[in-house]
Image 1 (cartoon, one colour):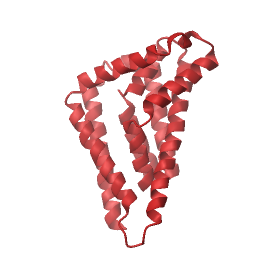
Image 2 (tube, one colour):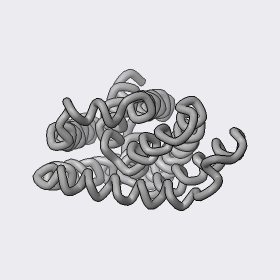
Image 3 (tube, one colour):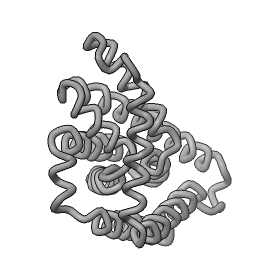
Image 4 (cartoon, one colour):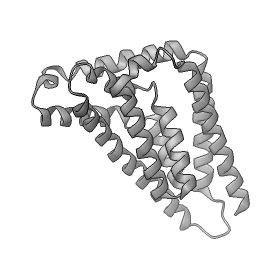
Length: 211
């Protein structure tokens, strides 16, 4: 359980910092109540986390149906996916400035698509933000990484850790993302995130051979 909490929290936190969802929350917070932005964004990410963990558990259950002497396909899938994202994140870190600019441009387009909804009623704005973030996050790196973690770790731990990571990242974006970016290098965040992906991939491989 504890391993799921820690790995879920760290991977999600460093995946989301500087991601498109991060910039969506940052930009919306400049135009509307920070509380409303946090509610819509965090709500969408929490629901997405539960869905991705459920998918990871489906994968785990499918693996349980296979003969006892077969390979642990869920753990192998999780390790492979974590290695893929680890390598990809480290490669992206080499062009971190351009990548961050691209994520921000995409976020600006997404926020612009809300149009007049941004100036509407509070509930309508929260729901619009929820839908926008949910659509942006579907199939994203953190979504797939959560599936991988849930397939090989405690689902309750992954949910708790990942939701906590989303909460911290969203809070940073809403309260002072633009200020923080002056002091924290996007390249450093990318390198640290990529390294964490590989570390947890290695831990998953160790667990495979320990079974």
